[in-house]
Length: 347
Image 1 (cartoon, one colour):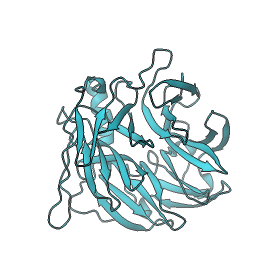
Image 2 (spheres, rainbow, N blue to C red):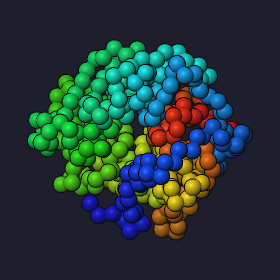
Image 3 (cartoon, rainbow, N blue to C red):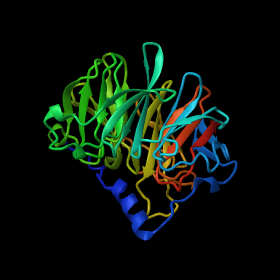
Image 4 (cartoon, rainbow, N blue to C red):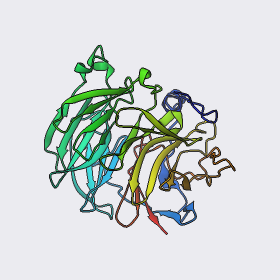
């Protein structure tokens, strides 16, 4: 795959982890952000809800990786803290339920409606598995390494980061921490084909999160993380479009209404100690229209977006986000000093 000159595929994910540990630096804790600070530009501006979702020592979090909002309006958080991998909140941040003690590498979380019921699909990068459960924690399915694909010599090579779900019940798995393949499973849960990988044009440390975009004739829209862009693939794995997001390392992309929401670790961390990450809001054409805790998006006359930076110490490595029916945004953060999710209300 050829990359536009404005994109410099980096290794910020590895650099972030390695330098933080090597230097003994404790990641910035987001709760110190200025109260009342307004984030974003134009018609998409938000205010941080101070203290939302902070629970006691009986309900700790580790790295907060995935977050979704149910039809009932409950917020479900996935953390790799095995005292309670799943934490269920109401919209006021009150604890409703918690479960899960068996997922040390809990990572990606998807909410899917099947047969009129909401189901959770989640990945564990340490166990190398994809799981399916009810909202209450009843385990309904499990998928290990796709041995039949012939792409892996051993199970340890497979480290799935997220699942993407088709309207027909089939789904794709992003092996974002393994070999970057994208196994495709049919509605029956059986492996159909394997996309991506180096021979499929996927650069290593790329396919981290994503979503199925559109109806039956839709496509895969993938957050290519360290590659600093979004990648649109056909259902057969053909590259359809690249959407550069220079300066932002997109961990996940979600859609609510006519807008897309992207959680970034900013590329200028740790060189710029004030840079912690930001959230982008994009229009239906995937053009950035607001950056929360980031510089306003600027495009040149040819439509190319300029380099973006984080500007306010609000976030610490945004990893996933969810949007509720009122338009509020909930942000889960990785390697952020064990901070609980952040809630942003639209103003």
